Image (cartoon, rainbow over all chains, first blue to last red; front, side, top):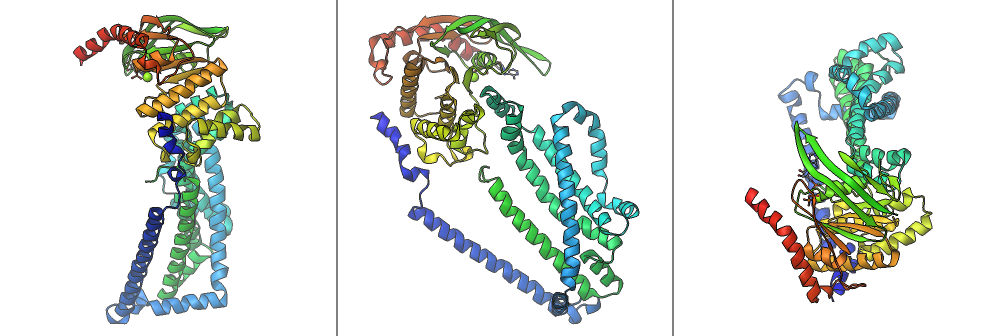
Length: 281
Length: 259
Ligand SMILES: Nc1ncnc2c1ncn2[C@@H]1O[C@H](COP(=O)(O)OP(=O)(O)OP(=O)(O)O)[C@@H](O)[C@H]1O
Ligand SMILES: [Mg+2]
């Protein structure tokens, strides 16, 4: 009798079927998202309208330009190919800096995380270097690597390196000894331990490090371009500002904001998939 | 071949204070025996299990398993710990298959074995769920399936059924007994529950309150094979429970005094 009672767990319903209630919840979720999207678009439109209204009436357009002028400039950049020309340069520097910084940060964070003694010895140095504003290194990198793409890559790589390094380091040390013991008792050697416990366990940390460092990679590349360059969105912005061309400055900022938001949205999706085992918050 | 526990003692030193968790304990657990450890909370049952599993060094004495002194993770045992040891980034089925994977069992054979084990613990419907999506009792059952799946010769089980409801507990006890009868595994089973110890074990080792020491050993002479559902209606079962209660009682009362 009690055997069949426990058999309730066999019910396919228990494993998660698309019941009417589940479908209703999904539909409600869909409506909620639509409403959210509507509210967001509305706020954007209102802000743009205020900006357009204020420009020329309340504030001199010399300082704040106006949405129509900014979009006209954007359109011009798109049609004459200068957007692709500059943006590709910035994105290339960002991607390269991110990759170099992330790989180095992961490798060194991992090694140091696995070696307690070494980590303890170098700890104060890491903290000290971490506290440096990495942007302050940009002039030095320009001196070292010239005004080409290398100096932009270097600025962005250094920022990414530290973020990924610290997260990897923390992640590797955060491994639960209960999991380590379980795998060792079941016959796992150090290679199995690495692949089945340490890396997956650190993955959440590493991923957080990667996620927060993407915008910084972009910032690093743009700052490098602003200091000295003849190409890139950062160059475009600093050049426009120098020539009091506010419409172009704002157009450049819009491009950066859109690129940053797009990258973040993509990373959020990826994170949801990679870390789907985590308890729903 | 057997597990010999020879004068094993454990003192923990933490934050400048020394706690004597386990006074020297000596016992022999023969091959194929089903032994229950019974004792009040904090008397060192998990500590002793960790030492047998080779996860914790003893302060004194040693454990010899099948003729070899245990000095590192003891791969002769499967250990179902009191704390949750499932890997949170693996689904239920991937957790059940972990031991098989580590032992290098081929994929197709492992898959069949995983199915069988999930059926045994009544969780076929939850195979794709992650531990965070399962209840505490379900996680315990996945852990049980995991430790049974790769078929270790000795099972160390630390309160494996504590989180289950009374009926499911009976079902799991029944399955465990059946597996034990068919495979001849050695089982060390830690529990707080006198009836559970009597229903399952050949021998019950009673521990006294901290520092844990063996205060009594009782052979359970109920006939085999046992039916965990009906065994508790036998007069002999009641008698044995009373005897064990008498062995535990002084400690229970003393604990209340201290509290
Ligand atoms: N890592 C540790 N450091 C210090 N003291 C510890 C540690 N682990 C356990 N103890 C102490 O050792 C004693 C025995 O602990 P143990 O976990 O073995 O008890 P137990 O019999 O398994 O209890 P329960 O039935 O509640 O699980 C306890 O008094 C506990 O406070
Ligand atoms: Mg315990």
